[in-house]
Length: 375
Image 1 (cartoon, rainbow, N blue to C red):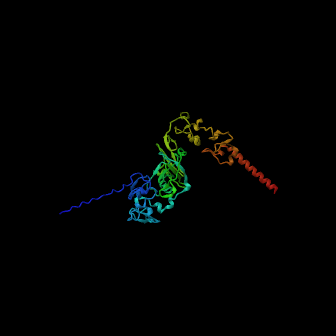
Image 2: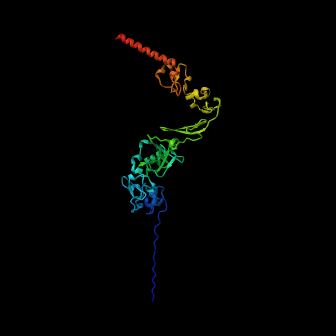
Image 3: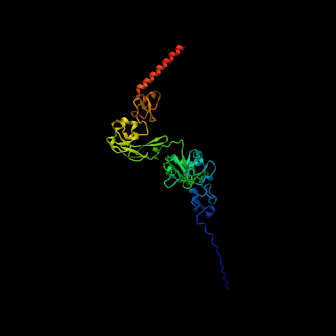
């Protein structure tokens, strides 16, 4: 007799993992983490992208067999290598780091410290960007100090943090005036320092590096454009220059100048130079005799708001100061206020200068004589 036994096994399906947007690390499966964009991803990506909600990868993503998966897993004076081993800071720069994250912020923390004295303000931002150059990855530290270092390394002096982790750089703040009145709240903590604010949602914390000389021309980060454009490094920025036959537009673009033979052929606030091109009037007065056709700037270059722009605008007994005001030649001997490359006031008022000197000498002699008589 054969007895057949039938066994029925009832299997209860496991609860599905959370598939919607996440708002806490517990919303994701044990092998996943919740990123700052409210999405669940595999834990392996957390340490590579450093984008966990709240700034730190959850403990569930830590692999017990590895000494470190990010720099913060190591002790003071150490960094995490590409082999997941903590190495001393002496090896920083000669050994590859985990996910190529720089070891500099740990081994030279002072260099990347937050500098509140460089803070300019919190501003609204949009797709045109207050600061034009973006750095989202490979910051030495996701703080304003780390952003500062990254921007300076690339030749920028303005830097800013947005939304907790986005770093932006520039050498100008042209967009700030356009967005100055737009509401902005910079209250999102920096990814690497929850005690520091790094901008906000469409809001950027803007800083300007102080005491740093950046050579935009030699680094190639300047904005001088156009045929024949040149660049000259200055202590506080750079100056765009243009070749003969070109004019500087908006401070950075060289465009062809109009040819001319007389001032009347130039339009607007321009004059005809001895190079036979029309240039802006601003460049006429400093070198009027040698730079302007006929040796004189035209009337269209005269600024009605200034008393004088050259000595000839003043009376024969006066000279033009560097404040664009006519002063009496009797003051000439005591002043050092020559205008542009004009001859000094002594050349403009030679008779007054010598007369003033003679009078002073005579007064000295008389005083000496009087003193001697009294004695």
